[in-house]
Image (cartoon, rainbow, N blue to C red):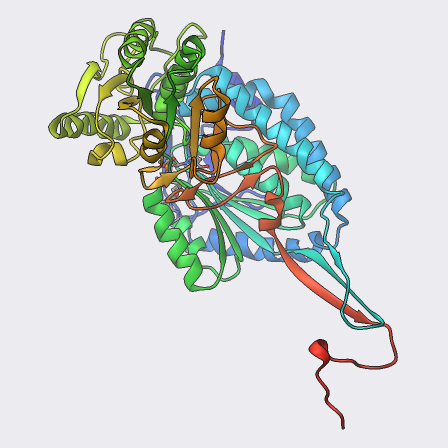
Length: 510
Ligand code: NAD
């Protein structure tokens, strides 16, 4: 039986907490307190004091100082700190995963899965700390050597969304730290306690290694994001959130010639071919659409189904939805938990109304639940509607469990429908036909950052580069060579001859 008070205590969370920290130092500010309510049962969990101007400046000053120290620590030694951070996460996995589930509302399995992703990215980053490779090139000039190397950038600002309250931070920090950067994190104000807990865990690791304050900092409060966008001391802002806010962040950071990594909204589709394994496709589609109550950037929002199997697949889906259990996400018997807050419920309700106005035919009706067990007001029914891809509501990302069905005749048409939205994050095809699979993966296939065959759209492994195209922002995080976004490349040419030949054979005689 979960005892949330004990869990909070073990994670260092009190009834009221400071939300500004340079590591072990927590700063009292003049900022107001925000209370975090659990969408699971509507109970207040604890409160956090938001950062004010003074705290912001104090954090930035410490971060600047820490960078001067941290950039000179050899990368494998930085990796050793990240290794210890991964070990600390292993110790706290159950507590932190439970807090994620309780504060954000995702299932306990997914909460624990998020912490596992943090552990995995730490392991990945430790290996990476010995592999920040640059290339060597052959110079066209005799007696010259040319190569490139990668240097840290400085302070990395991390602005994160509510739906992955801990994993997204670690994807960024673990890589940014081994690359030699220091990090300042502004988490979502909807999940501030998860951030406070993470900061306690890393702060202890840094203290145990006699590291200075400022390597990992935290600033909670909505106004902080805007400050970070415009702060020249932050050469890289890694932003995860909606396309609407990402547009603001991207423009502000670009105006000052900063760099940004943008991980924005998705509108992900699965193509269900006539040659699909339908049983497997049902599981992939239902988990993709209702898992995390449709609040993953990779949630399945559209199913593009071949006309020959459309009715059969629709009936199977309706049957599967009839078996879904909605309720407390900490109870492992339930499939669907709550939305994050009542504002999200309102957006869900409005999207259904808008869809109906545009002609959506609901084959599984939605609705807000209000019986016993749903007192937080955040529980809704996952629903399914038959639509056309061009409807305005289908072109948008509604962060809720609403699934749209669209019929197709040819694969070319299905791919055009799949690509025919402004977003470009995750996509999938269910087919046992090799020609179809390869066409979907070809240059003429999916235009998304993630394209899967016989796997749904939802979720990803840390080993691959994660991100999407078009209005998803173009950023890549996590695996593969995503680390390069956290460093600056420098090309070096060394002349060890006793003459000074110029490139391109240019003569300059004095
Ligand atoms: P959101 O855009 O409302 O908020 C994201 C973060 O931006 C929060 O920390 C918020 O406080 C901050 N913010 C708000 N205004 C800001 C401003 N002017 N400048 C800087 N920061 C500001 O998003 P959300 O509701 O928390 O999360 C859901 C969205 O995030 C969905 O669109 C989802 O698809 C997206 N998301 C994308 C990915 C990805 O990797 N592509 C991952 C998770 C979530």
